[in-house]
Length: 151
Image 1 (cartoon, one colour):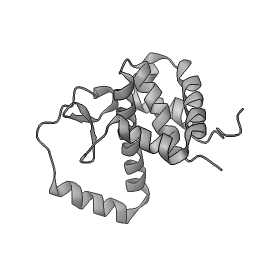
Image 2: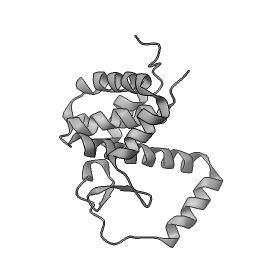
Image 3: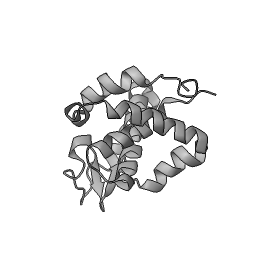
C-alpha cells in the first residue's frame, strides 16, 4: 500500500508549524488547512473544469468580513474565530485526526509522524518561515518517499 501525498503534506506541515512555535492542537489545524490549500491550487492548475467552478464560487464570495490575516501570516492563510480558514472552511485539530488517524490507522499514522519529525528536525527555522523555500527544498525532495518501506 502506497501513502499518497496529501497525508504526507498534512503531517509534514503539522511539524513545521510546531517548530515555528504554534501549539500542537493549533499546528494540526493549520496544516490540514495548508495541505488543503496546496491541493486546491494543484487542482486549479491541472483541471480547467475545476478552475472554472472555483472561479465562479470565488466571484460569489469575493471577500469575507472578520478574517484575521495576521495570525497565520507565515502560512498565508486566514483565521476565523481563532482557527485556520481556507476556501470558506474552518479547520480544527479534529480534522487532522480524521484525515490521518481515522482514515489510515494508527500504525500508518505513527510512521507518517516519525517520517515528518525526522525531516523537520534538521531544517533551519528561516527556511520553514518561507513557504516557497519550504515547498522547493523540503516538500519536493520528500513528497514521494516510500514511508512504509523505510524501516
